[in-house]
Length: 118
Image (tube, rainbow, N blue to C red):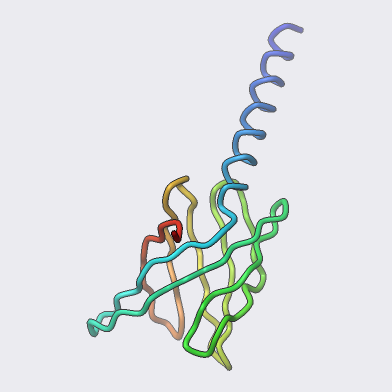
């Protein structure tokens, strides 16, 4: 019985800690995306977190675009940003002080790191 209660307490603590960490994910994050051709694009995301749902906006050359189909699992996340007929898939991991993001569009993949915007 004691072992079961201790296990339950540890699992509850881990769940609360993970939820508290990912809640800190909300807010503005910025970085830059460097392409294979050497072009550099500034990135700015404004993330909103509601449970396991991720929403918000991404700044694009066409203006702020909504984050679509956002999902959070632990410290991992995924979402899509659509610009006209181009669907840009994002997957990543929240590390507390930074965010690692893999971006894929039209068969091209790139990786970048975001930092909290000042």
